[in-house]
Length: 332
Image (cartoon, rainbow, N blue to C red; front, side, top):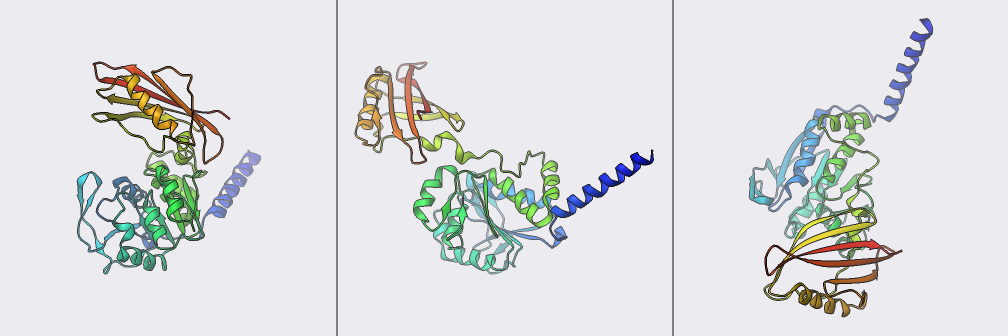
């Protein structure tokens, strides 16, 4: 019995010691403030996900827009804002969400406000294409960052001084943390909570949110095979033709696509046009041996390896409508 009690005592001591070792200095959650940038066209989940995480962590949160007036969030949701740039106090954490950022990323007042807030802040977190706004301040120059998976190439081209990463769900570059797309903001916000209050505290917040958080990154959208999709450089959709993407799914080695096509053309004529466009692209090697209801090409991807993209057509429920399925696979 004494041995059992001794083992229990030792286990409790070791657990407490391990927990203390991974915890940063004690911080009262109520002393942590979070400023969330808002602008017309901001993506709802980009700001709402970190808002929920930081709220559950007990941090004080306020929203900020240029004029302090309400903003029109994507999906046309009107949202009230707490502060203008002029009235917003300094914050421990600054959140820069993405969305329709064309105006925000070019707005001098917005970029200046982020720079000023970043000075006293302990952490600046961008979510999705919010990384473009953050990069526009120059704060990411010489640092690593990530963004929405479909914007990785654009970010590399637009900000050559930033090392753009595609194989991480979020990137920690010291006081600057960039999250990939959309729901990645949950993970990155939990990472910031862990930096402030400790890993176990962040895990408890994730548990409260019923969220399967993986501090070691987990699912990374930017690693999926569709980053290697390559279509003809010039793709002329025939007149009176609409192409609707229905599904887009896969893993790191294969990808499948499904489209619904409405056209005056037959599937054979439609694919003849696609094939002709593909032949004009010197980067694509068109497979000339496939049938008239199939088109395929191979190419070397920018990320490495050789890939094959194949499309097949099947008749739809009515004349002028047909289905197209695509399959992407690594050749080597």
